[in-house]
Structures are given as C-alpha cells and as structure tokens.
Image (cartoon, rainbow, N blue to C red; front, side):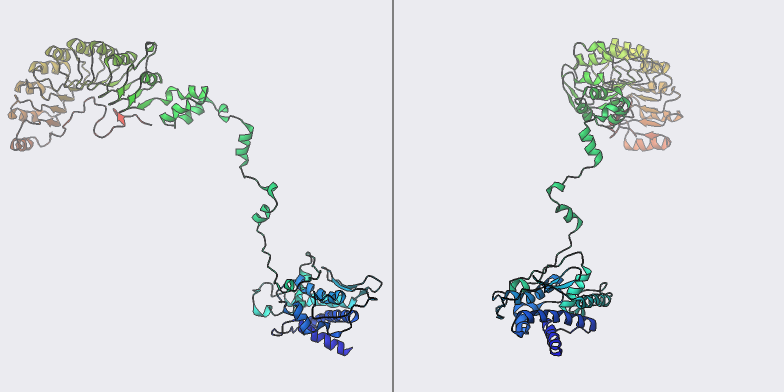
Length: 556
C-alpha cells in the first residue's frame, strides 16, 4: 500500500512540468495525491500493465505540458482521457500504451461534476462513492480560496502565480466558477490537448446588444420627433396669426416670398403690411407690374435708388388703391413719366421724397402737390419743371421745411414763382445753378418770405452782386451760407459777414487765392470756411451711408 502511495506521489509530480516549483501547501499535495491515487487505482483495475501512467505516456498525450494558467476544463479533460485510456485501449488515442482489454470487465469512468462531487460510474453494480475524496476536494478548495484570497486583487501576471499545480487550478476554478459546467468528455486528438485555450474576451454591452440578432436592431429617434411624424398633425394650425407674424418678421424678404407658396394661410400672413414696412431695392431691376405689387404690400420706407423699372410698372386697374408710402427715394432711377405719374397718383402720405435726375411734367408735379404733409423734397437735376408747376407745388406744400431745387435749369419766371410762393416754414434751401436767372431782388424777396432760414446755398448764381451780401446779412438765424463761384462778389464783401453772430460755416470755393484765404481766416477765426464740398439739403443719403434714407433703415 505504501508503494502505491509512493508511485501515486511520483506520478503526481509527472503531471507538472519539472522546471516549475512544487506546491508547498500540504493540503494541496494531499488532495492532489488522493485524486491521482484514485485515478491510478482505476487504471490498475482496468489494465494489466502498471506502466500506463508513466511520464513518457503522459508526455505523449500532452498531459505533462498543461500550463497552470489553463482553464479547469482542459485539465480535467486530460485527466479523464487518462482514465478512459484503459477503457478504450485505442492506439489512436494512446499509441504508446498497448493493454489488452478484458471482456469480463465493464468500463469505468471518472466523473467530476461542477459542484465538486467525484464518483466512479460503472454500468453494473460496481459504482463506488468516494466520500473521502469529496472531503479532501472540499478541504482543497477551502485551502486554495484562503491561499489565493490576496492574489485576486494583485497582478495575475506575477511569475509566482504561474507555477501553481494544474490540479489545484482545476479544483479552484471548479469551486469559483460553479455556474459554468465542466466539459469532461475526453479528446481523441493530441493536437487538441497541446493547443492552448484561447482567452474569451468579455463582450461589451454594445456587442451584447448587437449579438441579439437583427430583430433587436433599430434606428434611434427621439420620441417627440417620431410622435410628430407619425401623428401627422400640423402644429402651425394651432398657432394664431399674431404668433405667425412674430415668426415671419425675422425672415428676409426672399424667404417671405417663398413662404407665400406654402399654403393659403401662409400666403395671407406673408402679405401682412407689418412685414413690409421697409424695403431696399436699390440697383435692382423690377419686372413689369412688380412695383405695383410692392406698393400694395403696404411698404412705407422704399429705396429705389439707381433701380431700373420695366414697363408697365402698374396695371390699368391700379387706381383702386392708395399706397402707404411715406419715405420714397427715386434718386437716379430709370423710370418713365407714365409710370412715375401712376406711382405719384397712388401716394398721398409722402413725408420725404427724392426725385433726383428724374423726368418731370406738370401732371407729375400736380400729383406731388397733393401730398400735403410733405416735409422734404429733393429735385436736384430734375428736368421738366416750369413756372406753373413750381408755383403749384410751392403754394400746396405748406409744410415743406427742406427744398433742394438746384441745377434744374429753372427759368426766371420759375425762380420768381419760387421765391414768391415758397412756404415760410422752409429752413433749408438750395437753389444753386441759377446762373443768369437769380438776381439780388430774388434774394431780397426770399429774405422777406423765409426769415428763419438756417441753410442757404446760392452757389453758381453768377448774377449776384455785393448788394446780395447785405440782404443775406438780414437773416438772423442763418448758420450755413454757400456763395461759391459767385464771381461778381468781391473778397472784401466776405469780411462783412463776420458781423453775423449766427453764421458758422461759409463756403466760397473758387473765389479767393490762397493768400486771401489765409487773411480771411485770420479775420474770422470762429467761422469754418470751405468745410463742405457737396450740399446735404433734402438728400436721402449722405456720405457712405447707403442702407438708410433720411436716417431710417431700409434693410431688416
């Protein structure tokens, strides 16, 4: 019996690589020896040769090459193969073991379940329950759990932890991983035993979800979006017109035109006059009847500077409405007299109007005169003005405060009608360019008609004499005076203007030499001389400001 224990202990050493340290735990050695003794006894009972578990036989089957890091199923499969070798006696499995099988014996197999129970199963009544083995395996698991308690939190790649006995690993894994049953079926191939087991990576949550099949695949959508799409409810219908207008007011004009094609309600809301209060179409080309559509939208601030308006601008039925235009800039606009007359006939609320370089007629001037609230009128370089049209406008536009009628090629009668019937409320006047038709008498009539003038531009009025300077000095509130290129006025007459306490700026371009200009500046140190090249009277835009007219924005 002692020899059998000695041989069992010797064969246990053969199961582990000789180059590694043996386990120093006595409980581990006792448990492993007992397990191998059972295996040895079983083999002796089923074979006639005691050399079935020699080192060479185990090495040939790959049992001696098992690494301590392999799983419990690999180690137990190797042990079960050793046991089943005596039953099968196949040269394919163990080519170096040739043992005659006894016909009167039934095969016995070693079975180790996942719960640690070890029994010897027989087809007859030879089933042996090894109670002692159960106790030793239980003690072995408890010893291994206590021995490796501190190793679970440390690095598993330590060299001291790679030298544990394969049988110990089987018992430990059997107790730790009780939920996973062990595969105890022996393999009939040496390559299967020699091939190391691949580590199974722990699947991440998203991989687990993807492995559930195509049925669990879906495209994520927010519940609110999917609910809106599936319900088919038009939530804009639940909004009032006031809320829609508050939304539409942030859209550019091009977007408003596109919104009008969405639905009838959007078309009606997009045409609301509150969305079209101001519009800038400068440098644009307007198609026929486009101007009528713009005016019908209720635009109050409209800039059409240097725009090209195609004919016809208005349809024949355009006389049935009145526009809401109050500020209109038609400076340098290419528009026919017919279209301009149709436009002016729709305007009755104009406050400021610019018709610079426009072609006028008596009919157009008559339509302009019907705007009783007109405050500023710019007719610079306009053509077609007559004494009759000038008189009609001056008599009708009683609220006019700023007038620019320079370079309009007025006749003497037209100038007389101007200074005779101009509104006393005018405080800014520009009549420059009246070369041979404006005389000193006209200046005297103007002084008596408009004593509250603040700005007066008489540039290029070549017929004025020094007597006109005496009449100009009668203006008590005059702040700006321009008599540039009035060559009949001598330089000494300008020195007399220093007695005007209200005069602040004086423009006399082309009148004095550089030396005379320096002497005049010394005589009038508090007066600004030649500070403004161009007049700003009634002009809608001054300087580089091109997005506003008369200080009002034209773009959103």
